[in-house]
Amino acid sequence: MLQDQLNLDIELIGEPQTEETFSDIQPLAARLRPRTIEEYEGQEHLLGPGKLLRRAIDADRFSSIVLCGPPGVGKTSLAEIIAKSTESAFIRLSGVISTVADIRREIASAILRKKSNGRKTVVFIDEIHRFNKAQQDVLLPDVENGNIRLIGATTHNPLFYVIGPLLSRSLVFQLEPLSEENIKSLLLRAISDERGFEGKNIKIDDDALSFLSNICEGDARRSLNAFELAALTTEQDKDGCIRIDLPTAEASIQKKALAYGDDGHYDTASAFIKSMRGSDADAAVYWLAKMLQAGEDIRFIARRIIIFASEDVGNADPRALSIAVSAMQAVEMVGMPEARIILSQAVTYCATAPKSNSAYEAVNEAMEDVEKERVAPVPRHLRDPHSSGSKQDGHGKGYKYPHSYDGNFVGQDYLGVEKTYYRPSPNGYEAKIMERIDYWNKCRKAQTEQAAK
Image (cartoon, rainbow, N blue to C red; front, side, top):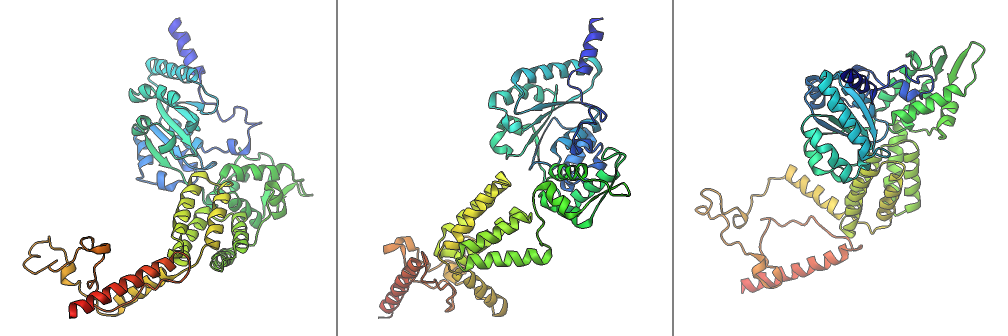
């Protein structure tokens, strides 16, 4: 009798809700959660044929998984699919509100479940980065011995927020923002699927569909929520049809659609770069704002700033490249909407920095010479003296070690031909570089004249 009661308790505690549970009050994004991997949109780099995560699911061979990625890309849905695919019970905990007591209770239930009927348990912890070290430590022994199968989800870099011992026992997968086509597919499924708007005749104009698919920056939940709001607040026409047009879609998400097709993308990016090059921070920030408002990929923007910092600022202010690279790393970790602040800082710094394209011109000119002219042989005294037979051939003989001379400098031939590629500008830090180059050139000339006497 006691064992029967335990079995009943096990099946009631923490089991996943069925699709019908509270379906009438669930938001559209929850109603449309995929039931199988085939229904799951996006993440082909993880779930495509032969990919590691797909193999781990199909083989039912994993103990712990950490899913990281921005909001609305399917972390929870994927965890539920994994549980279903492996015929495991699904327990959901929250890194925000769950306590150590909650964890211990669910682990105890999982152990009883395993002993009673052999069924495995997937413990899904949403926002696992909110768990402190003590809470994460509680999970370790039972992940280690297989009492539970942990799936953690986080929008943060797990290397910084998940303890090392747990990471070392986990497969870590990075989920990417959904593509515009992925979200279009979800929106159209909401119309045709019985779980979407059952009994309602809904149509969406192509421009409204494209707008909702693009404006939410790969966040399926946000796009579906906006679509549901538009559908529920739009009156039927005389034919009983609820038609979602572009103004309705804009109102549902409180953003207007910008003219930003392929031409808008390239033209705006061009204006953005040219404004920074022209040292107009105000114009550069405006074009940045347009790109962000249009849903441009923040990583694309960050990459353009990095290229600009080297191509157009260069050694006139070497800090510009460091700031641009740091901005790229920061927007990856933070995401929108806060990423706009980081991008603005990098843009305004680069726009107001002294400018020089000398490094850019130098490498272009050198590459052109390498391509069109006979490639210069490496001077014998610069060749590696440690390779087989190199000493007999005189490799390295006559090389002068600069640190053995005053000022850590000595004049010697490093190219074999007379060429000047790098011509520093008089701007910013390059003015000091030019002073050093002039000094070294004078030293070379003096040493050459001395050797000739």
